[in-house]
Image (cartoon, rainbow over all chains, first blue to last red; front, side, top):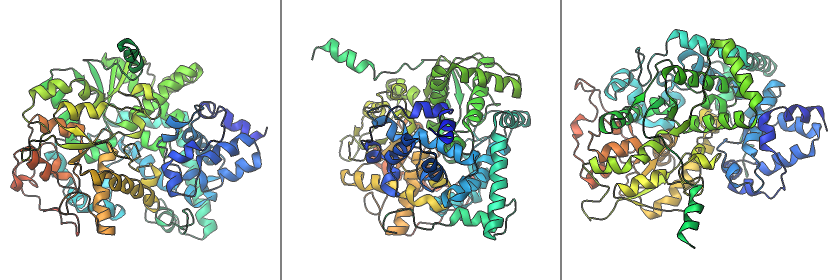
Length: 237
Length: 356
């Protein structure tokens, strides 16, 4: 048994997620990610069961752990009550805690997720905020979203929202004292530390890759991780 | 099999849903993309059914999208959820109702974790004390808002003005239902009908006069996949999942798609547009798409609410063909007007999907 494996077992989601995998592959059969990417949840469980630190470290540095969509379809189907999707959450936590996420193309995308969803939680109290869902970053949202985005306040008003106003209601302004409480929760539970780690290691990686890096979402490194797909992730590419 | 045995067998697929006094927590995705649905839910619960539904303005996101994008640690999400419980406790409520399926799944994951690992619950209680000084009681019941509409589906049907019947043919309208993955795939006992026979949307469609279509990819994910949609480079995953579903359901010629997760209707709506632009394909009749609805929108339609008050104008796949089949009146000229009747311009038409 290795040190890295021991570390994973300290996460309660690992205890819940891996009992005894018989490698039947049912999880792979039901998995939407396995259908799209070069990915098999069965192999994740198999690698973990070897308890081989070298293999686990390679996994934590790979694109593989970032292919899952966390839909948890595998949980319903496993005949032994394992939860490969839950194991993925454990592996992604470890990959970030140990600084391995910057070693893979898909792992480096954590900066984009931190600077959007992560920062919006602390800034607005919501995971998503309509003014920040820019049509140029979301062409798939179509002309309807472009129209809505161009007329956000009157459209939200028409639809009965309380957009950016005080009191209860849809997309209300979350009071500053409540946002302050969220920030304190992040501070005491490790959320702030994770955000700082993602920022710092991404900055170093950008330097190593010779890319411009600042705190905007338009810098070269951010655009690179947000839009680049090396196309080595799916079969036949 | 004897009736008693059958009843016992089905017992595990039942779920207790409280009949009043709900503490309501909103959904990030639904507020952004279907704001009128949350308004309709409250209007139905309070105005039509006379129920007590309370919203505390201090509640926030549960952080679920951040958690499943793996940028928010589990301890942080658990403590944010503990804070929501503290607000519920101090407001004097015990039944939590959530608008979001990601939240519903995460609330259940957190409660199950605390049940199996009481030391984690104690740790989270300490985190919350340290951060905000709050204490909390664990809710007696956690339901999704679709569970509650399901519970009162018959009352809604009786009060309703319209039935899900094609007025031209007299036949029931044919719907496909799409259950959000985190509703019952992780914790089957928490959903009506479990993971194998989720009945929460079927019950609504059938009780309101429609017919449910079974199709091969009925239980496949819509393709959100959190990071698989949120990062532009990964969106091939997301659109491929939705495409698989459309290809599988289209031969059955559904009149509409009904959803209970706030994300799924947005993806199933927008990806129809994107597939039109990318592949020139449409999945409805005559170049139209298949209208995608939230359960609040469908309930509101049955109750005869104005379609533009329900927010049907912010769908990329027009819902008018379905309104026409049911016979629900609407004013096309009012579709893109603001609250005071001011004209807000019109969205451009997609190049393939029929919009005007």
